[in-house]
Length: 185
Image (cartoon, rainbow, N blue to C red; front, side, top):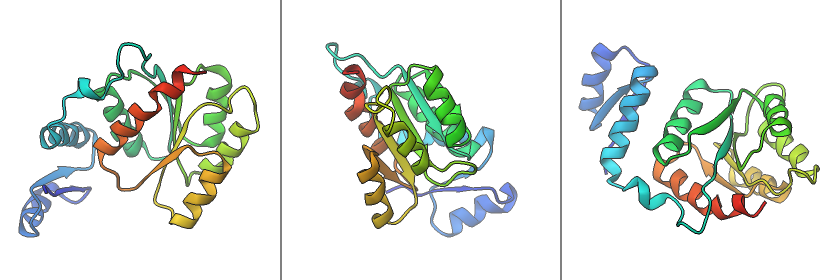
């Protein structure tokens, strides 16, 4: 299994240190590094992107709302979405911004972080699920929370979750799973 070290350390020394500890790749945690990471992951996974798209009788998810206070995490997830053909990705910094977008845009899937300023992901889920206009939108939580907290989120209306750090292939499979949900609205 390939090991990728994704770090903000000084690139001069970090690359050698990554090699010394057995990492196969070193990627700088910045804009250039994110696109490098996306290429490396695509090469490692050897997964034909088209196989993850839904069949002709299903409409693909057209609009994803991505809610995360981390610019880096939003870029990583956006690149994964772009890689499977989802080009309309709306971004929000926290639950407050996420709720505003849900009220004004036609959202097919929400991918949200848990811990964010102003309104966290769980509070946002509660508000979404209490509004019958939006209660059928699938919601995926991306989190580092413990299992007990994740189960609480599932009980409140989260459809599924990915634990950080996550494998991009797992996210692609999860999105493919929700494609049918988005067409049933």
